[in-house]
Image (cartoon, rainbow, N blue to C red; front, side):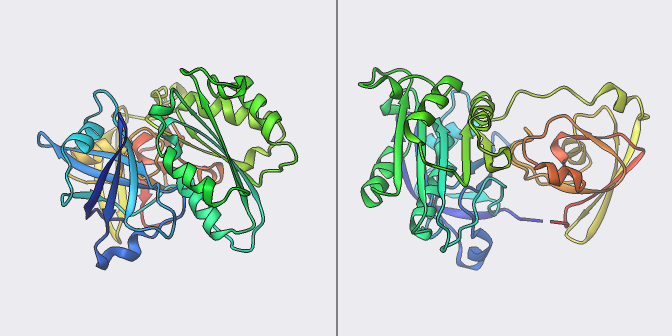
Length: 356
């Protein structure tokens, strides 16, 4: 199982009035563990008022850039983001797990492809990593970005994007869309809803056949943009998405599944070559929390079914997942589940964290 390691803060830079960029140095002995693919994220853990808190933030650095950088949008009442913005200083350490996530791209220097990106707000963070890495490492590829924000003043990484445009003017298209500022051209005003996606695509994507489209932002924006791109002719399997924030909780286990279960279930965990076992009630919230109640620390981060930090293989038994935004269909078919969203249906289950 991946372990948390202390990363040293090298820089903290104010990006906008409500966001910061944090640069993190990885200890040399763990450097290989923190190699990443463009678009991946880092799970972090802090302790506030005696309670451990975990959150996941995407890497905004290009694949060859060090130290690693993340972008943090400060959410009102967001304990982790407010702590990061107001209490961390250069020289402090943050406990971070090695990179993970399936919203990424495998680079190929010989590839000549067109890529399409739709980002809203802090959803630009992983896509910025992709843009940097593609432009540097795929010299024949191009990227078209549509980036929605309220105002220019709230737009994260705008200087980075303009700098990339200056370096790669023929290979990077930038199109900003602002919902709370008047624009000279109507196409640049509004929100990234279905009509706006169609309008942008028709104006700026003629002659382009995207090899991949990447979408990142709030939950409702993800679905709208994805559905519209598929409607416009992009293969659904080539539209990749990652949600920012934790979506609204799904309903609890289906009644027909719950009806199959008695009260208690035996849960066996395989992790780092060792087996651990505990009992839980089938109406407990999820396996991760039930394990913690029994003194077993399972990997997790968002607890919203998004980041897939809690991904494991169901070797025996049956579970039901309340929500799944982190697993691909093939992973579900292969028996992988999200432990933070799962509850037992059968009398016993065996979960394997060592199978990748």
